[in-house]
Image 1 (tube, one colour):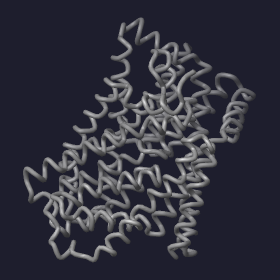
Image 2 (tube, rainbow, N blue to C red; image 1 turned 180 degrees about the vertical axis):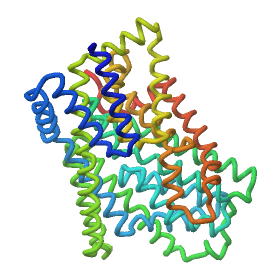
Image 3 (cartoon, rainbow, N blue to C red; image 1 turned 120 degrees about the vertical axis):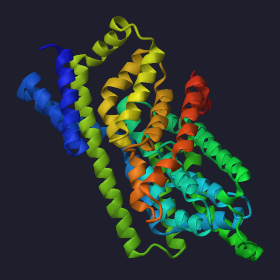
Image 4 (cartoon, rainbow, N blue to C red; image 1 turned 90 degrees about the horizontal axis):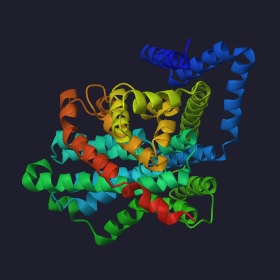
Length: 442
């Protein structure tokens, strides 16, 4: 049996197991170990899993995962994130669509606190969505705002997905985070621009808040501003020494976790329940990611041993005579298709053994490609009929928002994100400029 056929059987077996509802790490790891045993015998099969586990345990930057996840859950569970929305409510309620604009700002800051899109979706749908509906905002527009804003969680640092990509692609996490800042803020700015234009054309979509709701003492407004900017202060305390080179990535993540914990204590919100929920959720998500990375490393080792990447490169470039850019675009389209039934982590670990080395062989920058992957994943999250974010939104939204409303709400935001993806592809400097400034090549 040829190595190409073995690689095809492995990939198809893994997809079949995923379609039957198996856990991602179980399907990937099982196929990897079974293939290794059949190819190289008992010794090869056992050595593969052991080597992957040792590689995972020795990867020092992986310590950032529990730190950032804990920081996000502390800020969320202690309701510090609620203060953010109160700040936007008071300071931006006088603008047409001001609360929707504030919701995008809330999502950006939540992303900087947690690094997971699910956290932004949960906070936006429970805090912002009821308030927006109560204030007469169009339900379809605000539903789209929350879905689009929450997707920024996997692009704006500290993105957990980019940490996983860095592990699999063997790229510096710090450079990937810096690469995501400009595209992430650009997308947030495009979302805000769309809201401003739509609400200017049709003021009924985002009415101005009544004067009595905004007429509060200046001292109270300043207090809300201070409380709302606290998460931003924590992010600054965490990232500034890292960008200046005073601390390592792991040390900065520890600073962020400690700062969030201290802030919750000083505000009197670090109860036993908050602490237990934060630790339990952190442990659960961290273990899930570690199992997925372990399975992905094992699967990738088998593919490397088979030489599958070279075979696929030869198929595309020599047999089919496709240009590197055509191959890259086909990769992005495949992400969108897979995003209809898989989440971002599953997509990454399934195709990373094929795509990441192939991208390098085609001559593309892997830091830049990491941002392309992330933006494409965001688009896949919101692409009907089975986009991941669509069903998360349906589960968290109030009954008056139907699945039809959710589908209709995301169309303009998906178009904006496709435009942002095209801009990053045409102008790679949008992603690579900041890392090059902070880490100039000698």
